[in-house]
Length: 190
Image (cartoon, rainbow, N blue to C red; front, top):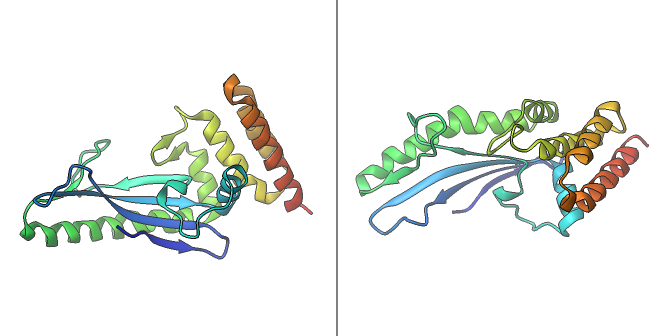
């Protein structure tokens, strides 16, 4: 299904799409709603590393990525909306709209504020990714966001953590990232 995308004046992207299950059929449709927030500094690093970005970004480009699930789904369980009969469709659509209004749009609107996005990283929760399992990733995420504010002790702290804790096979990539972020921060303070 097509994405809903919003590009802000800062160049941040909020992306929402409906993902259907590979196990859906003509008789039964299963789906979830994906939320994604891609801050401009994160996209700039992605472009520096991978080359030009597509004109239309998918949710996989987001730094923050999460899913919405049916109302009443148990916490921590990835439940899917299901349409098994045409009569189910209006109720599923209404619940998707409800989840977007109660959770989806407010989350994305909040994270479009750069300060709130930095706080979200510091809280250790980027949706699918949690700091307890991805410490280096979170240090890099915070560093890339802080790079827009110029050099700082906070930036140095995150970059140092990322370099000290990277696995040996990723050291060259980590050094490239460190150099890129430092140059970006230096240009931000000019």
